[in-house]
Amino acid sequence: MKFTIFALALASTLVPAIYGSPATSGTDFTCEDQQVVSTSYIGEAQNVKSEIVTCSNTPKAPTSLVSQAVPVNVCGATCTTNCFTPSGGGPDPNDCQVIADALLYDSQNVGALFNITAATSGVVMQYQSCETFFIDQASYNLTYCRTDWSSLVNYIAFNCQATQNAHGGNCVASDQTWFVQVQTST
Ligand SMILES: *[C@@H]1O[C@H](CO)[C@@H](O)[C@H](O)[C@H]1NC(C)=O
Ligand SMILES: *[C@@H]1O[C@H](CO)[C@@H](O)[C@H](O)[C@H]1NC(C)=O
View 1 (cartoon, rainbow, N blue to C red):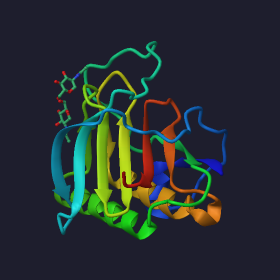
View 2 (cartoon, rainbow, N blue to C red):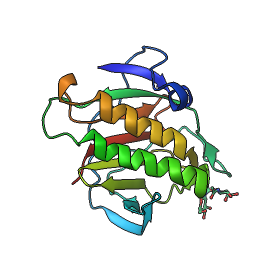
View 3 (tube, protein in one colour):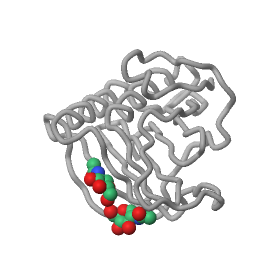
View 4 (tube, rainbow, N blue to C red):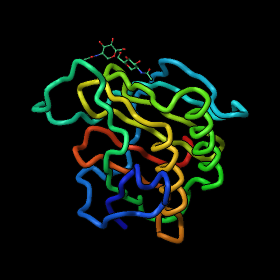
């Protein structure tokens, strides 16, 4: 199941806006040689683990993209959702919802935006069976919205389940510079 969604629209409606072409990198990403740069706990209950990580295999965007002096704000950018087949072994979407709620809480209490340094691969969050990545595939820093990530976690978790012959999925930015993945905790 593949379709294009507008993350910003999702924040209010949770409904895909446009059906589109498949992403070119809709494959299940595994962070190899994961190094944790820092760890914190987020949400009202401080029970969602949030780690800034580096991976040895972070896919990088085409080098033709020039580096930017200031972080590029990708809030509301479109991405294409891919469910990972087959069914079985996916995260409990209710655990993913705890992460989504924690992101909403932090959006209101910490800040709407967060920066991802290109020197790292991105951020991984985990609560019980559910894990979600935000991966920076660009060679420059990005800024993203916690509400957008929250919406994507909920959307992917509840729409890429066993009933869809899936076990999680991702949403890959149209320009390939970032993606959000939802999967079972490793
Ligand atoms: C990205 O952000 C880091 C940390 O804030 C900073 O040290 C670095 O210079 C930034 N990179 C660019 C290309 O702006
Ligand atoms: C992101 O980085 C820019 C440039 O360093 C900085 O001005 C801004 O305050 C940072 N935003 C957040 C949410 O940390």
